Amino acid sequence: MKKTKLFTSFIVLSLLILSTFTGFAEAAKPKLLENYQKHHDSVYMQKIESEKYSDLERQTVENFLKTAVEKCDFSMNTHIELIENIIKEDKIQSSVERMWDLHKNSEYDEKCLSRRWSTPEFFNINIDELEGKDYEKYGYLTCKDKQSKNFKQAAGNMSEYYGNVIMNFKKDKLMDKTTLTIGDSLNNRWHFGKNSITPTMAKDPKIVCVPGYFKDLVSLLASQINEGKLLPQYPSSISEIKYLDASLDYFELQFHGDLSFKNDVESVDIIRTKDHSESEKREQERIAAKIKQMGIPVNVIDCSE
Image 1 (cartoon, rainbow, N blue to C red):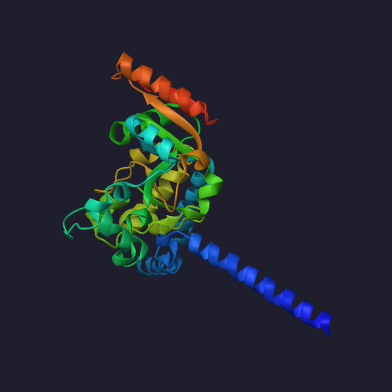
Image 2: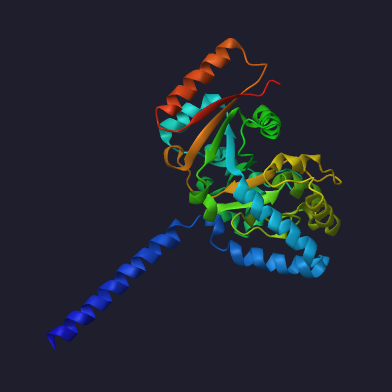
């Protein structure tokens, strides 16, 4: 009798422990991804049925995206004057989170390209459920060959707008909480309408991330892939494709949940251009040395060619 009670108690305790761990796992899931997959899959089926995609073209584009994710780095730019504070706080934030006090009270303007109001539509969630920390952080796919012309050209262009420090993330840690679009999600939403693009999971990308959901654009991408003009290891090659007003300059990534500089950053590239002064170059070297002391590899890359 005692053995039966002991065994029963053990089973109950095991179930409680399992339930607790399950609860922790659910709590750890980023807010935007809680109900996202069902919405994504529904949109995917609708678009396949309505656009009548060629299965071969669709599979060509989706297989290309999977290969690009495998062959490229997950990266994000920041300004060099912000990096020390990021290191100190060990927290990489979105612009919405950094300026949440301003964003949370902003009024909705239908003609305004607003991250605050676009995000709930992308991920099928009520805006009232979101706080600054819940919003996605934006990055992009970068070429692994940091000395290649393809990388330097893309890195130079991105650093001009988003800062010359590129943080390359530990991809395996972020795969389950990273989504992807072809081109700038916000600009393409602005050009083609609020339902024109849906982020897709980077670990299993689908055609819904194509801006505008245009059948012709899917066909164009497939033909460029088959002709070897769009190469997965060189994501900046997408910028050579011109299609209507679609913004196809890069493959955008949306990172969800907390990002730690110390634990999530694999390496750092500091981009140097011909416009940087001697004092700016010295600051770049100082920052590089500080990051190296943390055990994180750093490359100062000259993009002045």
